[in-house]
Amino acid sequence: MIRELYQHKDFTIVSKPEGLSCHNDNESLLQKYGKDWHLVNRIDRETSGLVVLTRNSILQHDIQNALAQGKKTYFAVLRGNMPQNPDLWHEWTYPISDKGEGRELPQGLVQDQKQSKTRYRVLQSNPYFSAVECLLITGRQHQIRKHSRLGDRPIVGDTRYGNPKDNQRIAKMYGFQRMALHAWKTEFTWSGDKIFVEDSVPKTFFDLFSLAKQD
Image 1: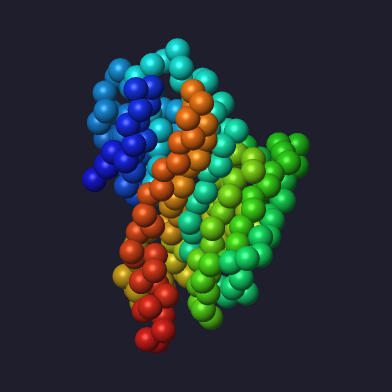
Image 2: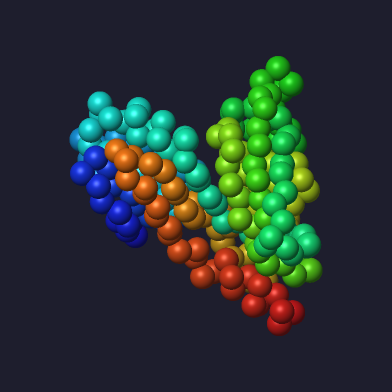
């Protein structure tokens, strides 16, 4: 279900559910809103969370620039244990391409690689999973998915960059059937106003930790 979280005269910020494409399918977010609407940002079909739309095509580019100068924060559950310390920020700085790649070559071809940076901190962890807050510094395609994979901590349920057998095992053990990546918060300035919107993290992400304790 699409939920509208914030309305401005120039744009609307919605919560997109996992499994819904922003624009590529007949059953897409843009199709559901109608041809008068334009996407300001996009997230992957497998990702849930915040998407900004506008009816004003003239302002579309300016709103995109405002978003780029603001903060985009994601919540992800990664495979494996990482030291928990919410006060300590780390960085992934692997150069990656701006294309959709695959598990065997997530960075892409050397000639296509560009400087990339994701800041992250570990909010919760156990022997099986780590919940991280990710702040995009650059905006490459599949950036968090690629960076976590290159850091040997792929996102749980990521069918493109994760381990298929591992994903199947987690789905069977925990009933978790999606990719654990959520566009969590957005913060930017528009027409002198500070815009801050947060979309609550799906409960199923946290269930992974409570269920794992029972194993």
